[in-house]
Amino acid sequence: AQKITQTQPGMFVQEKEAVTLDCTYDTSDPSYGLFWYKQPSSGEMIFLIYQGSYDQQNATEGRYSLNFQKARKSANLVISASQLGDSAMYFCAMREVPMDSNYQLIWGAGTKLIIKP
Amino acid sequence: AAGVIQSPRHLIKEKRETATLKCYPIPRHDTVYWYQQGPGQDPQFLISFYEKMQSDKGSIPDRFSAQQFSDYHSELNMSSLELGDSALYFCASGSPGQGIYGYTFGSGTRLTVV
Image (cartoon, one colour):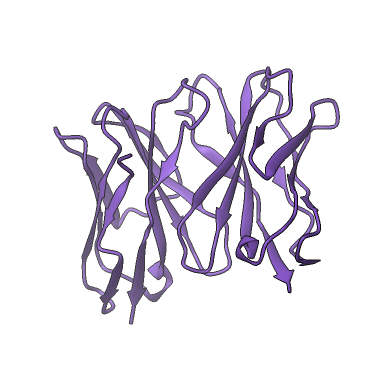
């Protein structure tokens, strides 16, 4: 079963608008971490934001915020005031903390975001 | 601040050749992860090392091997290359259990097998 689901393969958004990228996850571990990464066409994987399962507040990093709804198992990324440079592939990823694994990341399929001028 | 360094950035090899990818993690990070990302795919975990010992293994073919050296740099060795090995190979480093910013990725090595 998919552990990380990103239901939006692609999105078009007008510049300066806010955009929400969806991510739902599935885990039975009480301790886990959720990550969002940005991958522009150049290929590098850029860390954006992190949310721990025990964090009481939603994570924020500049224009990025994570709408963490633990009961719904969702961790949506919100980008405020989108810019042309935000056009990229966005991946949601999860790190579980099981006894037999060394914290590898589990990835969603990604959402391709295109910002229109 | 120092980042994860991967070399080479681009590599073109012929079928059945071998390739060696290198990764230099961030100083004091004790864990290195290797991921393979095919065109239009999400990254697939290959293998990880903790304190120079292999700690976890994912979908790494038997034709591939990896190790982490005493200076903490890691190498991914790929033999008998196939066309399907063409992908972006990422190395990431981190310190498990330290939570935030636990993973920093290098810029990747784009391998093309022709």
